[in-house]
Amino acid sequence: MVEKTPNPPVKREEPTPWYGLPFVALGHLFWIWVLLILIEWVAPLWGQVTGQHAKTVLVEHITLLQSDQPHLAAKVMGLVNALSQRIET
Image (cartoon, rainbow, N blue to C red; front, side, top):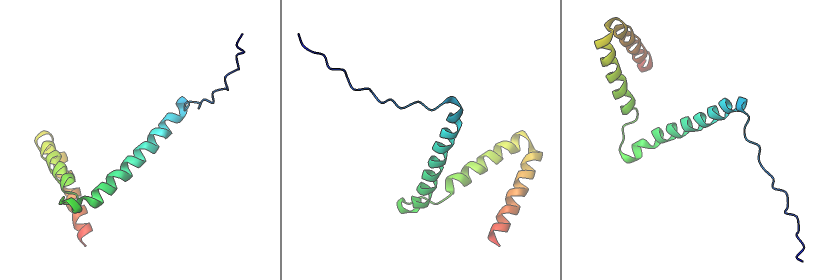
């Protein structure tokens, strides 16, 4: 008869416990954020204007807010205006 040799034990990695999953997710979000910043920095290499998409989205959302709640839109526009003036100086 053929003698059976025992298989070597399989070394299994333990899955991340449930209480560690939020920290794993934060790690993934951090690296996604870093990747997006790098893409934003090299965007001028292929003709994109840096921050143009963010400006467009901000204006669109403020316009929507203006139609729904004009008093909040006025406050937001005041904050954006003050911030832009502070950045320019």
